[in-house]
Image 1: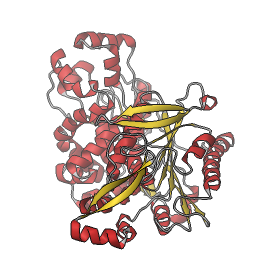
Image 2: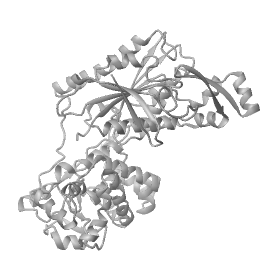
Image 3: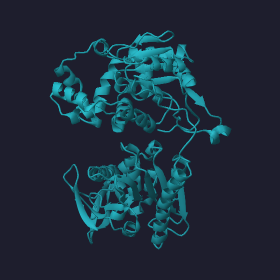
Image 4: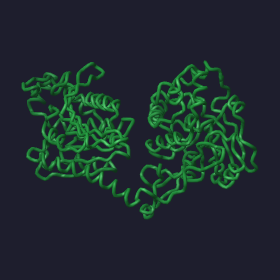
Length: 537
């Protein structure tokens, strides 16, 4: 047991207790860490939290939110967003040390903050444990005493007595604080990644947060398990051991189910191969097979393919393209790139469409360095580079969408040089338009790390030309999951949605978009869902 102090962006100290479990660390894998967060007026050793940390088979860190326990800061009533920021600070600290945030266990207000964090973080949290978390924030009005309500009405505030560090303190709660709490939007839980599983534990005798809130979470979150405790109140007094045993059992079941599925081969399925060996071409794969949100269909396979440039394709590679029934290839490269790398050989029955996202590009070292500046910043810098593609590419993207509408049964290829950036942006638009989950889109994009590579010698030449390190060049050539997740977020922030971008910038009508979806989505009837296999990465 070790006390760790972490400094947040306001230079406030966040204090917590780290429980080590060296026996849980597996060689070659990042150590798993469970975060345990408290509720209102709580602290890191409040209620069941210490007992849970002692019993968990994983390493854990339980900490005091700002203004609580041993942490710095001011105690406030409605500042749940500050709790979210503290979770971000703590996760960043441990992720930088190589940990995987395996789960977050939150009680009451801590659960609410955990849900918000998990629905917005770049890397999905595998497990969330929601203990007595509130969903209907407006019901807090009913928790106020008559005296508090009267004081708010007459004075605009009331005094809230709390216990901190062994002494009682009076906190001023203003009407704005109460409204801030009420305005906190709980509906963000519907944005949780499908890679996140949720366990909700709620006491039937909870008169602070009604058990109906647990039912709401259960109905909204598809990857949800609900456990009710008949004799438990909001703080689970007298039920700590039962609660901890339930949480431990949940983790054990998930561990055992994963191991059992692997041993029985249940992770395998009958699938059409995603990767296709087109001799002389790198990074060639089918973008179909991914399921759409809701599980009512999946992306049509053997329709749209992505890859790197086709300049070095062999005779065998040509025969493979013919066997796939490909009728067109859209080349996103600029004229200068084509002059440098060459073009696809002429193949009867396959039309090549020069579709440059950037018509003319300066390939001087200085110009390349400027253009690649976003990539050099790491994964979070990729959206800056991809923004220019979204700004320059609408006419090109519209051309491909309209080809698809006019040729609904004619497979085609989209490619740039590596099949990573410009190609990746278009695939994001197409899959996103069809309702594929952000998580899947980002993981599909990340597959380029398996399909495209350059030798150390090639990287060294480019690094010397640009006066950068080889590690910098490796970042540029990578396809980071976080980079695509951030890009999707940027599209939503700047254009409203992927659909809005396609409609407004590519000038597609609602009817056009509906047609694309009919072409690209293979529907699954309800009675067939048990036979459906989701595509594997």
